[in-house]
View 1: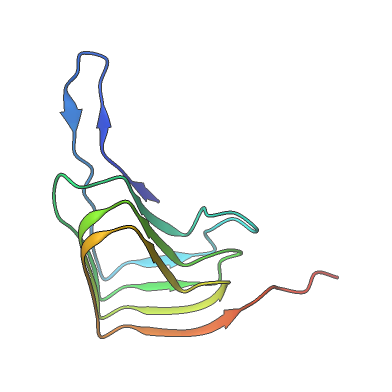
View 2 (view 1 turned 120 degrees about the vertical axis):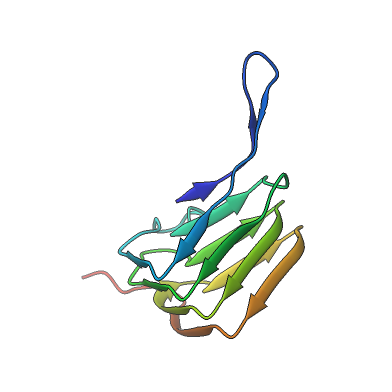
Length: 111
């Protein structure tokens, strides 16, 4: 799932926002990429929030917040991801509160 701002061909700005409450995100994210199960990338126009949700069993990162603003991430449970549970880069006004992040692996062994 990706949240991002973009500009239409007629120069109209579309502001990306995500509101998730009590949602399960299962078996998302791509192996060896920055394509996390939940991504906030290049969005600054409005608020997004993810609360009381569960993210689990992905092949890559759990949450990636990059060049984003105004994200509330609270009271969530995340487990069984690779490299990072939550990765934040060059972002502002990000609130991470009362989350459980566990079972993060450096790599999954493939047989």
